[in-house]
Image 1 (cartoon, rainbow, N blue to C red):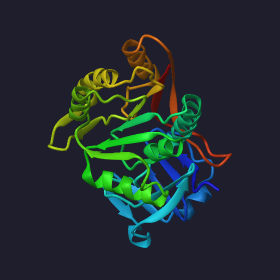
Image 2 (cartoon, rainbow, N blue to C red):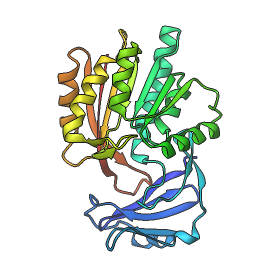
Image 3 (cartoon, one colour):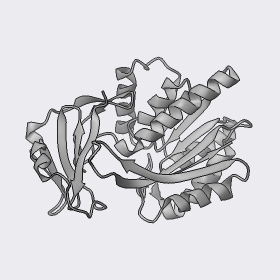
Image 4 (cartoon, rainbow, N blue to C red):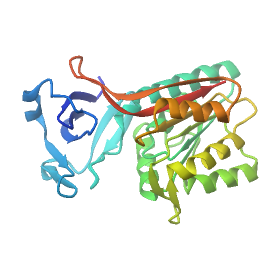
Length: 279
């Protein structure tokens, strides 16, 4: 049984179950009415941004807990920004990456090199590893990379070929190009706004084009896919699709919305965009 489920949404909120913990958090795009008002009483804690960032009921939650999400064991913990260490709208992407690498590895009779940029707590990295990929996990936050390594241990993947890199993604890509390191499959989830390892400023509207050009330069001669996701307002599926079409002339580009889903009677919540280039 999967430990994540969207229970309900509405009035700018979402009600989600993460294993043994049920949380009520902001969700600006859920402008409709809740379908099941009584379900919200199940919430163990409530996060709000109305008067600053505040958890209500956080003291009732464990410091951390485990949840199995689409075949990946994840350590979860509440953060001061209302995050938990996983973005469940990416679950379908994990499944696709795992299956694609498994299929292509079987066809080629050798493992593919998979690069995960802005890689957060490692859900996609671990799904890729489960699919047989040799992985490189890059994030500017040392704490998040350590969190991802802990998740690898939880999944019995501590000895799988994974390079754990704390670095600014653009600088890392520049070095990989100089080193002539190449990757068969690349995932990137650039932030709207972020800081690199040494305080480098990353603003998606200015930095993404450079990132994509660098990604193209480190693709292998036999690329499998490039997967681009975004939570930035205005970066719709068509925007991401157009970016990949201009970047890579051959192959096929698909795009869509990332969705939160769960209970059969819970309305799906759009939670970002994705596009993928497939050779």
